[in-house]
Amino acid sequence: MPSYTAPTKDMNFILHDLLNVSQSDLPGYDELEADFTKAVLEEAGKITSEVLAPLNVVGDREGCRLENGVVYTPTGFKEAFEQVRTGGWTGLDSDPAYGGQGMPYILGSAVSEMFSASNQAFAMYQGLTHGAYASIHTHGSDAQKAKYLPNMVSCEWTGTMNLTEPHCGTDLGLMRTKAVPQGDGTYKITGQKIFISAGDHDMSSNVIHLVLAKIPGGPEGIKGVSLFIVPKILVNDDGTLGAANGVSVGSLEEKMGIHGNSTCVMNYDDSIGTLLGDEHKGMRAMFTMMNFARMGVGMQGLAAADVAYQNAAAYARDRLQGRAVTGVENPDGPADPLIVHPDIRRALMDQKSFVEGARAFLYWGAMVLDQARLKDDKDADGLISLLTPVIKGFLTDRGYDMTVQAQQIYGGHGYIEEHGMSQFTRDARIAMIYEGANGVQALDLVGRKLAQDGGKHVMAFFEMVKAFIKDNEADEALKKDFLDPLKAASKDLQAAAMFFMAEGMKNPNAALSGSTDFMHLFGHVCLGLMWARMGKTAGEALANGASDATFYETKLATGRYYMARQLPATAMHLARIQSGADPVMALAADQF
Ligand SMILES: Cc1cc2nc3c(=O)[nH]c(=O)nc-3n(C[C@H](O)[C@H](O)[C@H](O)COP(=O)(O)OP(=O)(O)OC[C@H]3O[C@@H](n4cnc5c(N)ncnc54)[C@H](O)[C@@H]3O)c2cc1C
Image (cartoon, rainbow, N blue to C red; front, side):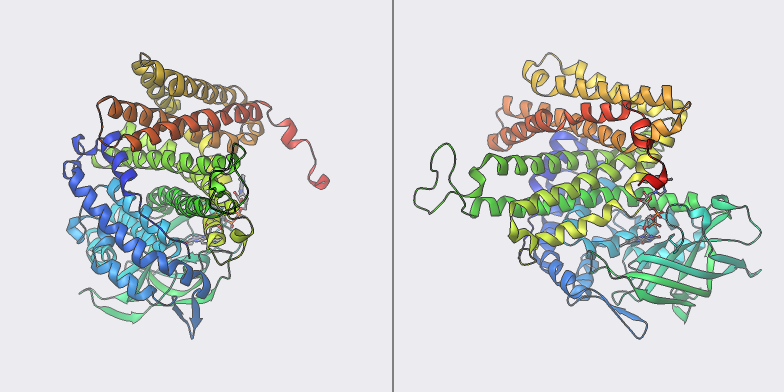
């Protein structure tokens, strides 16, 4: 059975040594003193490693089942959900006006990482509820907020997002679900949605669906889409539950992973809904949810990589195979442990340097998001909007790769189900697909975000990297190991952006043929920046005589690995981008 240990030490290093959160002037950050975050993270660590991690494999093996229209979750999920709910974990970063604890998003992100790493399928029930909460909180009327939010913050009621239909996932302008106004402020919603995560289950007394639909007579395509709140059970004005709404589960999808999460075909038959936000502005309201959700999915990539890495590292220390090429290291045993072999080390270093770099990137991103929403800072908003597709796409692509590397360390024992490594790769795979498939994230990055506000935000990012390098160049060791590689990678990123600017208008295929490479190039530079900043922080801690020297030395060595072995990938991505559209578009469709 695989296990999970919450990486609280690394989390606290990022929060305090690197980001210095309690010194920030962001509202609520003064509460994030080291003792406080340590206590919160350790408590979350306990419930995730002791309760949720053991249920992960149960969820995988049993899956959900649909009986007489009711969805049942795997054994133990319901009790664990109750424990999570009564422990107050569902409302950590929600508004106190609705029963939340009002903590900054950055702390919520650290806790969510643990939930996802220990049991991704389980964590999605509350993760989707949080996304639906965010949409209603931002776009709902006071009456809608009062009616739905308190029970959603506590997860008495859970939430879903309903975009996908059988004939459209990416191209939502093709949507057919209809919403007909009833003249009393309500709408009757009719249509079918597929692949709806947490669409129904037995762990809450109601499910609040956010459903995209078209009001007849509205604009064509995506401009005619509106968002509706459609509860499974109607809610009376006094907050009590009323009659069943016309909402039913058509079937449960059979799928590759996250078996513990119910992925439902949802049928809406004249179901009663109320408009969330403005008519025909449904995508705007849905995007509030999706930006949080995309950061959350990026986090799933990191979380999956971490739990897989933890188990692979333990296995590599334990499993005896072959002898070290430089001489026997375990003379009393029949062989040396796998971890003596350089190729196993390479795989473990790939994973470790990705996980720690990604964690820093994600928490820094969460802090930028807090800056944008708590201070209404437009520059921060522009920056996080630019980085969101990178967080989602790069962290889930690479996170999945890392689960495969971890599985590889187990050899054949990784492929069979006994050790749980196969589940990590199967579960991690979906994060590359939902919340906008990664190819579409890359398209969003190159086609929209790069040029947003006249390219102001990407320029600000380049300036930030440049300023960090310039301010720290006097430190010779930092310069050689971290700043010089970062400078080279950042130049590759700038050259790629220049290529798109020069070629993109003339030949859009040239820009889009390189979009996934650009997303990865950008992701590597972000992790390079994070490692350079962590390298500086760790170096300073050592120079100041930090008591835990091994931790900081390990940090430095891991960072040097990333800079030397991972960051050079930027040159390859740039070369691919600069090769343009010709190699990619050379064949006619019937030549494939
Ligand atoms: C387990 C699971 C859970 C899900 N949960 C939810 C949920 O809770 N709510 C919900 O609404 N949906 C959910 N989805 C649906 C998911 O978001 C969609 O599957 C996804 O957005 C892709 O849509 P699609 O499957 O229709 O693929 P398509 O849109 O048909 O795309 C197919 C491929 O083509 C690529 N592509 C499409 N258009 C372009 C383009 N213009 N340029 C380049 N490439 C392009 C895509 O990147 C993708 O790789 C879930 C799906 C699964 C499998």
